[in-house]
Length: 325
Ligand SMILES: [Zn+2]
Image (cartoon, rainbow, N blue to C red):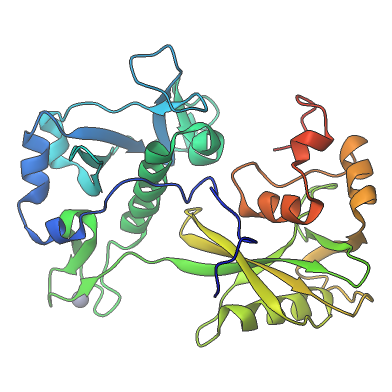
């Protein structure tokens, strides 16, 4: 995949600035040492939320306003699931701790003050904190869903700073999973963009097409297959645009732009409620009159659409009109 000046820069969740210091994970005592060091910065994960503070809080905020609440280690942290996330340029270590108070369903209607999801906070965090949140969330979910060995069914336990789980019966080691998914603009000979609405999406919510890469498949083949399956057209060349981790719960999204000479859509009703071609002028009109909604601000989907549009959605719509969700 050639990186050209056509690629998308500064994707919201691809901005991590931490050095992952992977070699440090090999020392069995590394988390104990880090949690005994008052200089270590600890970020707590509760369910899918982390605590953030506004610019006038005690923390130094990023350019866009929010900062993660980072604290010194507490004795209780030794008993929690710990994640050695990396070090910054000054050598300060960052450890995620996963709270057993996971913000269970009963709390979802009234989450504790200042605890936000990554979808809510991701864009407004500076690069270091966006990386801490993205990595900690992905790892925490992997641990929660991989408590038993896929080979023999025995319990597994965290090792290597939270980057491995080891089977207690036979010692097999298991590593965090990331599932690749392709996401692509498809443009016709008139430079119109293909937009689709998923089978279970609300009215007016449209995005570019996407789908998981299957075993044994290249990214480019996955682009062609997904477009053919969902709307029944074949694409020509697919060009790489950019990628970002997408820990909802465990993906990385790989963005492409594809072209086609076919314009007659035959949608798969199982996957798609509707699909349509839009010109740039039509898309601007649909945004302005509120009859179409864009993907969320941290998504690569929004950036892919804006790449085709040649301007940001915000520059089309007056700020504050609620077209983003
Ligand atoms: Zn096992």
